[in-house]
Length: 131
Image 1 (cartoon, one colour):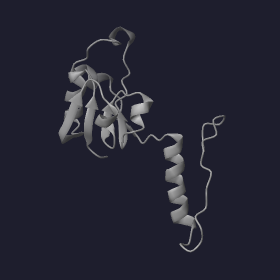
Image 2 (cartoon, helix red, strand yellow):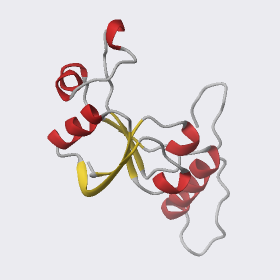
Image 3 (cartoon, one colour):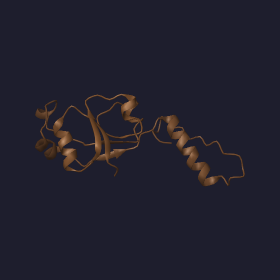
């Protein structure tokens, strides 16, 4: 897994936990809020809305299985360690990004370099949730 470049959190316990796991790059930036320019093309960890997560190179979450009484509370590193699941890293695409990426893959795999590129339809079927 690539090191994380940017962490979006208001929780120092999470940052300490990520350091313990040696997941952060040397020049990792930690902010409590992010803009598109902050996350674009970076390996990011935290909680982001989808309009920002799709701009990241990768997006990593640390799932926390918290009991109800700890939800919404500040957690120290020991609590994060106690309730954290394994890190999960995603690559998130908009429909247009997905179509463009899949066309590039299909062209590389199926076109012989002499014929015109094939226009593959890789849109996501909203009723089935898959391409």
